[in-house]
Amino acid sequence: MILLLDLTREQLRGLMKEWGQPAYRGDQVYEWLHKNLVTDPMQMTNLPKALRARLAAETVINPLEPLAQQDSRDRLTRKVLFRLSDNATIEVVLMLYNRRRTLCISTQVGCGMGCTFCATGQGGLARNLSAGEIVAQAHWFERWLRQPDDGQDALRVERPTRLTNIVVMGMGEPLANYDATIQALRAIADPTAFALSARSITLSTVGLIPGIKRLTQEKLPVRLAVSLHAPTNRLRNRLVPLNKRYPLEALMAACHQYQQVTRRRITFEYALMRGINDSAQQAQQLADLLAGLRCHVNLIPLNPIPNSPYQPSSEEATRRFQQVLESAGIPATVRLRRGIEISAGCGQLRQAVQQPELHLAER
Ligand code: SF4
Image (cartoon, rainbow, N blue to C red; front, side):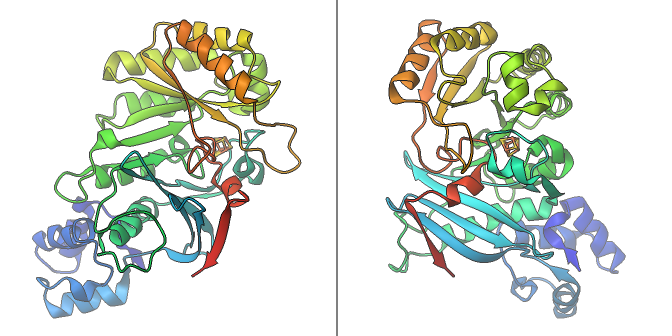
């Protein structure tokens, strides 16, 4: 079965030609998929009946089967667990705050980066998601948001409405699945179809330098977030094993290069861990490391995983860390423990499942 969302507009035109149809049928299918978000080829009413039937017989549109969902107690965050066609599962989180409707999407099943404080990292990488499996996450939630409110849903969002932001911070390292991720983001940002501005999309990496270099040249104005978590190589080697391959000096050089070319501000994510990376001295080291970059630091109190030596920093240590950064002229925000914030910004969504304030509702 062909997953239609895996195909670019050009590839859909090619498929239609292969099937003996005029190429413009590919554009029509693309619009039905990415603009109207239909899930059944029979709804593609401007296509000949026989073509609709063939699409129904030989292709799939929605690869996601929702298995369970969780809402936070404040009814501002919803996580849905989806099953894919090979029974792999991924999680996607919708967060409502500051009038934003932000979706946190995954790019891999599991993650191969092995960050020692992250539950996803402990499980290793199962496989990459395809472009269509990534796009489908946005489509699934967008479809739900576009529906009129039936008064039955608990989430505090007035529908119909639309997604306002996407953060690529779910399971996986997006730059380790570069081609599929970029293809998916291009489809989401296509102004003629799904039309979410690329500037409303943030891609988060743990520091895969070849990927950052490719992104620098990509001409896709998404925002870049780098998960740093430590100001020295010695500590970062321990927390983020990828640092042994791509140490801080090289990572910072790639960030400077990215900024020089794109002129875009970079966000640095820093999960604060008690007694590990949260001293005033480490805050100063971080400020020194980031000097000369136009950037913003998100400080995230760590969400601890069971049997982990890493615990969240105290409020006092968090404030002190923030003050040192701000005194050095680096804007820093302390994130709330909610949604992506409780997930520490990069691939820790599985941890969020274990949040006691979340309850599980089978679908
Ligand atoms: S923190 Fe991000 S990059 Fe590191 S293991 Fe977890 S998901 Fe992968």
